[in-house]
Image (cartoon, rainbow, N blue to C red; front, side, top):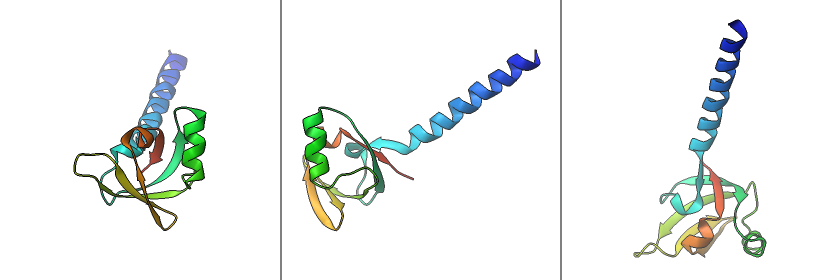
Length: 99
């Protein structure tokens, strides 16, 4: 009984830790104006990932969401001191850690 209880607590603890981490990871397209975060991951095709990295969106880079166009696409972000416009489909490929 003690072992199963301990295992249950460990599983629950791991689940809570994962939940905390996942709460802080969002897609760039879901950021709000003024919100800041750090690039953590990329999804999608390799060609698209390389293109985004060539524009300066590297893991560990701080990003500030500036604004969204009136119809929602494109969106403007500030990285490394310059402003960059991205389409929503491009921004959906970028994982951001906020917090």
